[in-house]
Image 1 (tube, one colour):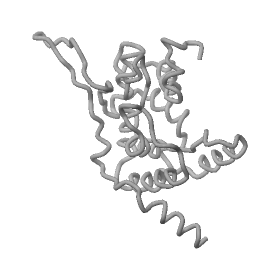
Image 2 (cartoon, rainbow, N blue to C red):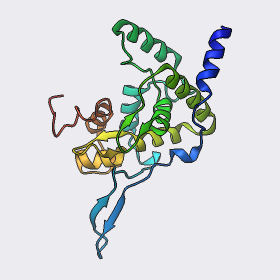
Image 3 (cartoon, rainbow, N blue to C red):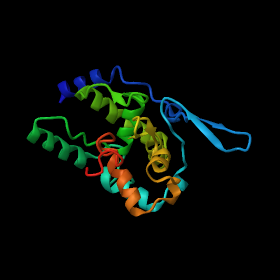
Image 4 (tube, rainbow, N blue to C red):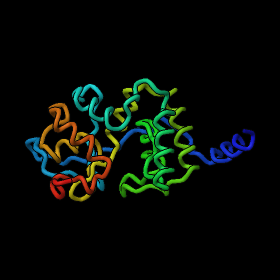
Length: 208
């Protein structure tokens, strides 16, 4: 136990310093004509942030059901989900299952993933320990709804150029409508796309 505690302390020594300002997601720039009509959108990634109140209940339910069923009750680290992921990884001898909560994924996408490239540092036990520690800390400083909407505004939804970020741009890209107008099947598809944004792009690989 003592050796384990020393190992964890060592892994946390270089963890990022958490700041709530780090979770503000930069939006792309909109260019309008003289009549106020949009003529272009600029940015390495395309994003328009929305508020939690803009989300239809079906969308909230879809993401919670698929990604983190106990999100509104756990403290940022879901032990049963994590243990299940460990056993799954042992069976497959891989790191395919991370057991991450929304909070942990928000931490990962903020501190360990290049937003523009959509790529992160290699998976490791040290990084996972840091994600858990930062997630527990974030849960004490931020409301559940804020964590959830920051997560949905940040995540990668792929797109033709792999530059669609956040659920609002994903809704506009896939369905040509604001997120508040999504119906149940549309919400369910968006919740499934994020597991593999490139492969599950419906315009290129509808069969998947």
